[in-house]
Amino acid sequence: MIRRLSRAYRRLRLGTRLALGLGALALVVFAVVGTALTTYMRDYLSAQLDDQLGLAQVAQSKSIAENGTLEGKKYYRWYYAVYDISSGEAVLRKPEQPEDLPRDIAPLTSLARAQAARNAEVLSTAHIADQGVYRLRACEVKPGVVLVSGAPMDDIDATVRRLITVQVVAFGLALAALVLFGRRMLRRGLNPLSDMAHTAHGIASHDLTESAARLPLRADKRGGGPEVEELRTAFNTMLEHIDHSLAVRAEAEQRLRRFVADASHELRTPLMSVRGYADLFQYAAANAPEERDRHLARLRAEAARMGVLLDDLLLLARLDAAEVDAPLRVQETDLVDLVREAAAAFRASHPQRPLTVTSKAASLKLRLDPHRIRQVLDNLLTNAAVHTPAGTPVSVSVALEADRAAVRVEDAGPGVPPADRERIFDRFYRVDKARSRDRGGSGLGLSVAGALVRAHGGTIELSGEPGSTVFTVTLPRRGLTDR
Image (cartoon, rainbow, N blue to C red; front, side, top):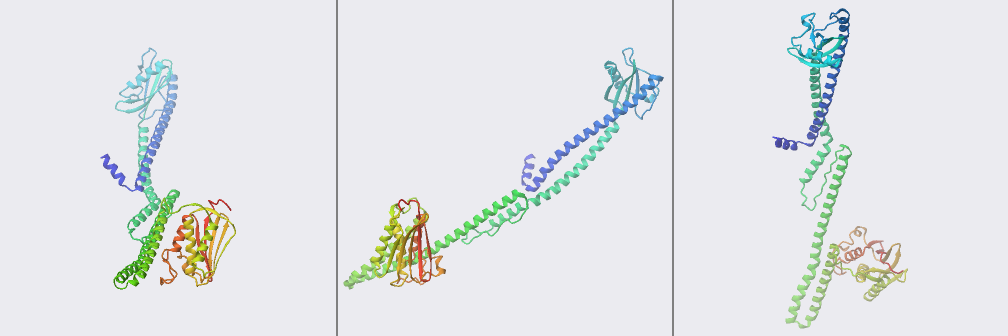
């Protein structure tokens, strides 16, 4: 039975359980207050009855002492008995009226003996047969004479019973009202929690397996106090975090799909070329030996191109994965010398391009991977050569700015349209939407450069305007050993 009640209680809603708990607490309080009030009322009425007995006995004692008779005011159902104790025994005198004594006089006689033994007033509560509970008082009227008076306590008991009845009814109504209205108030106060529960159920009904899944639901009902407000804020913050994570996941999946599609597109062309030149080489070996070497050279060129593309993809994958053995071989390197080496290689491969190199410092030694930073510089210079007309001047400058070393690669070409600047570092992204091969490049050069700079803790930015394109590479000053 207790287990069933416990299970039923646990199935109740929180507001109902709180209201019942409040009602149980109120019941305990009402019981304590009712008991204290009833006890006080009984003691108060008993004291009043004792005073009334005392006043009556004063008048009657005076009458016995002066006249020898029991006179004075008598009350209905009160009993009076006069005992002679001069002989050491309580001897009852003949009553003046038969109704002054009850049939059972043993309690009165016992009290008279107690008074004689103590020689002081004695008060007692006793049950008189066929009459009920009486309050008895014994006092000495004159030497050797004791008066015992008894007053019924029926009125006190009746008053106390009525008081208990009124308390039970009043407290019962108050308890019912407390539980009823308390439950309504608690339910109103817990409405924000219910709103959060409905929001959670709404989220559970969403299919979060889709790549475009979002969580537009929020718990927006106000009220409930600071604690509920704090819980609502934490709940909505969690939903914002989940929603942001889903958006990031969706964006990552879209980038991955685009990356896979672009990689497949880029690899398909050299693979088709390799297959075609292999067929031509096989045909030339049998029918035109003089063409064999030319087809073999083209076959090797396409294979090398595909190898470079795969190396770039592998490098980007390792940088994205943040591997422990990241592809960086850090050592102390002079950044100015590295820029000059890249410039010399550029002049050798593009003699028709005017290139100027400036540096505010004769030497800038940093802790970096010289091969990877050289790769970044080569990619930026090659990008300037590929995407600008022949003869366009290119300049490279090196400077130390605050806590960073900056390398700027600038060309006077047509520039990058503003709409393309945000995606210029995306993989396989080309400003040339036709993806033509006549100007070279696979769309990975700037992506690789950006990833390598970020791996060094630096940044790469594109700025400029029509007629000027500036790529700025900044590397952190930490590790700077000489100026």
